Image (tube, rainbow, N blue to C red; front, side, top):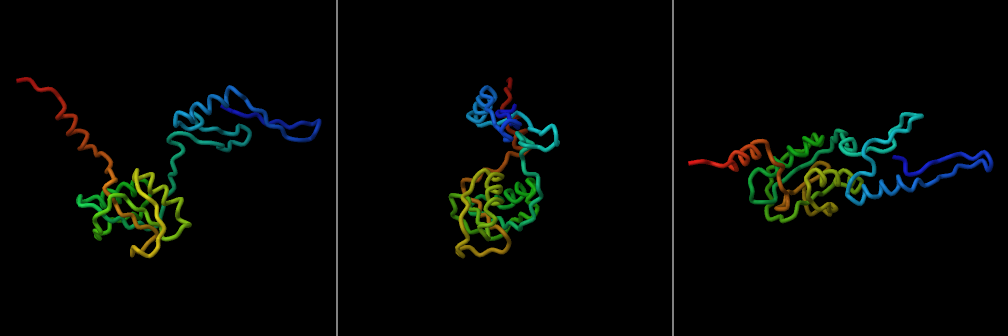
Length: 175
């Protein structure tokens, strides 16, 4: 899919861009459906440069080394540990469950040490599937690059044992 075509004119010695209406329409229909603009990677055939990625190829697989302290802000035991493991599985290798239990948080908070870390804070938010990114105004004491306080809005990822026990209990029985 190439929604535009670029060509160089020897008449006016300039580059011109032309819209390929059918391909543009197809791309916009994918976007309207919440899909990536293309079904696969777009690669410049002359240079081999990847111009756009789609689907699983678009995932940022970079190992992130900033320290993340994860605290449980709920009464549900083990959520800080679960969220830290979830972040580690997504290449946030220094996500650590912190024993501090502030409690009483309805919403997960993601607090970067500096606003220069906001992009990575958004990645943390995406991995956890929830959270509000707030500026560090000194209210919370933490060491490292991020403090994540897990709130009641956090849903831990399903585990293999969760799915196998639910499927075995949903079968029919005969008596």
